[in-house]
Length: 188
Image (tube, rainbow, N blue to C red; front, side, top):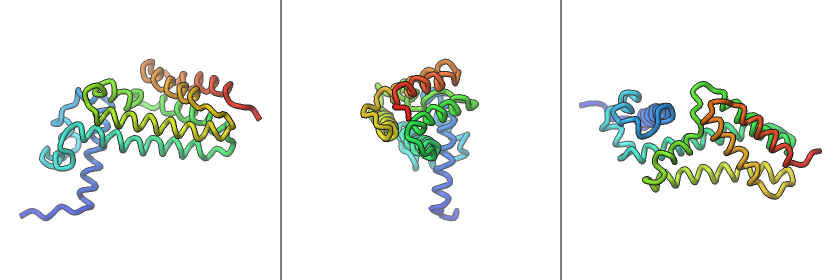
């Protein structure tokens, strides 16, 4: 009889599964990746995978949720180290430029998921909307700290830069969006 699986092994297996699924879904698209490919990449049997997530949709939502925490956490860590409120907002675009220039950048994982599944999966749509609202709220805090009351223009610049860079494969939209955002913020 095999030894029982420990909580630590469950945690490690779940993380390996999420890592493999995230990489595959982001590189190739959610619908293009079958669960057999996720199995192979994660090294876990399908039976074990389905114990963690009963459906592929549940796996997609878990991938997006985990990516949101990490992505927004990395962004906040970078932006919030900048002491000046105006420069903090502009640092958002510097962080985006670095992300856009990373090898394998394929645009926004949430926009990509929405494009593939947003009309057919309420759970994925809800996760995409949750991420976009949290990103908006995060930007709004930084923008409001400058004294600007309306954050939507800066949010639209960030979102537009992400989509444009994802389509063009060029990180330049972050610089253009940064320049435009600078005109919206009060100067010291």
